[in-house]
Length: 464
Image (cartoon, rainbow, N blue to C red):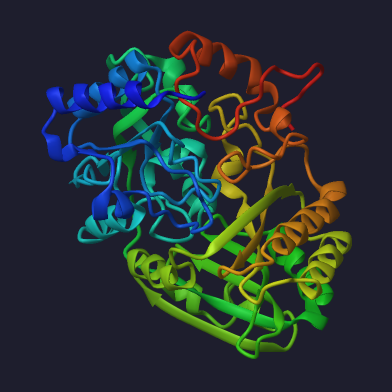
């Protein structure tokens, strides 16, 4: 969709008529800040950046975009590697000023504005010894993470971030505002838990909190030559894994600049069990000869915030994803060979552990459909700006292709890019038809284009 310059200018004039002029940004330092995303490789630039401070301003933005035929996008945390936060040559609703978090201690609920990042949510909850189910790092936008699913270190005990969503305020494509939860607009509520930002703008949401005063977490690194042995023994641990233990795994470049097998456990049960030499966490240090084994006991909020330095803004990133049943020898071999072929020392494989409470939610209860125990694998190519950047995407594609024969169909929609045409039709499994019917009801003109949605429900498709 292309919009001519006079139309864009009229849209700017209309927004400035409706809203304070400083909300409507078309250039300058505020524009540069508002369009700077986690992935520095994203080249999309909106014609208009609307800095929203209220639901009313979001409504004005949605209605104006529709009236003038402008492509529309929503920027929350700005962490989507594919750059879908920015609407190229269109209108981007920047929700970052809407970042308030209110904690109801008695109800163990948080009311989270649409632009709040996970760190802000965790810091607010931590004051009361409470936690939220979030992702691996804290700079992610809480809404985007939650709407797409939300794997994280507490998933085994408390489920996905989406499983902890209890309600949301949503601006729909026609500019109307609705509250959705299990009793109000239940179809929309179902779709929001895994279907992403394809159904409206979530300006506020209510999420469930949990009492976890402290976690035990850390990192264990093994040499790559031990990977087969370590991951085989890890499978024995994971086969009888307590809900309170979630183990992220993968391959990263270690302190000596060489790829190493990584275990990144988080224990959310009683700390004394997490630190017990005979317990399930410390057992992870004896799967081989560990080069690094470091653990800390402390608040979940602090642990997540400490990870953010590993993933700074501005680097160039491309990601592929596969959903893998287990650390089979074939999977581990693909990881090892992929690690040896890495084109950047900043690249990595990251496998997110899905088990326990998250796997016990019936597949049809939320739009997020893959409820079998599995690992969500991210093939993460990261580099600094250079001339020959195409080689990193080639590596990511090859590594993803090597994992494909061992993976479930589909993948994690929050990470899938638009080029994953072989995976997108299968993301929502048996939930696809219902999800597309809800999309047709609430947004028949396709105003909202978030994470990938299939075009149709494939024939003979199951939930996994």
